[in-house]
Length: 86
Image 1: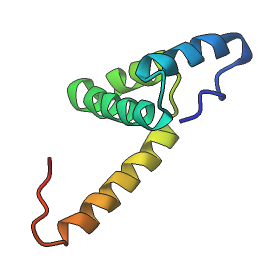
Image 2 (image 1 turned 90 degrees about the vertical axis):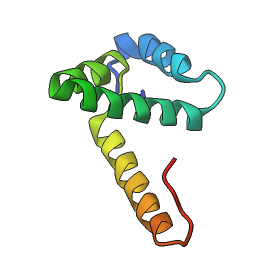
Image 3 (image 1 turned 45 degrees about the vertical axis):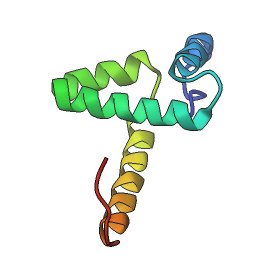
Image 4 (image 1 turned 180 degrees about the horizontal axis):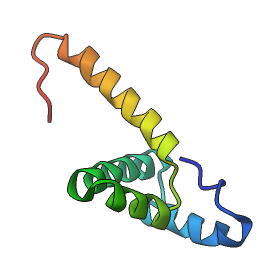
């Protein structure tokens, strides 16, 4: 999830939002952003999703791509014997 899409005047705020997700790991920041996005969609629908994306300077397209990858991985793992969702 790149925060570089934020307008120049908001780049500092976008970087701060990323650091608040996880200051040390881009991977963990992405995971937290994804989980927050899913929660926002499930709990508040489109309005909550838009607000989450806006306040965290996130791209719906990028998170949709992450979601597609997550679904593919779950599907592949579900075919393996003994897999259970955690």
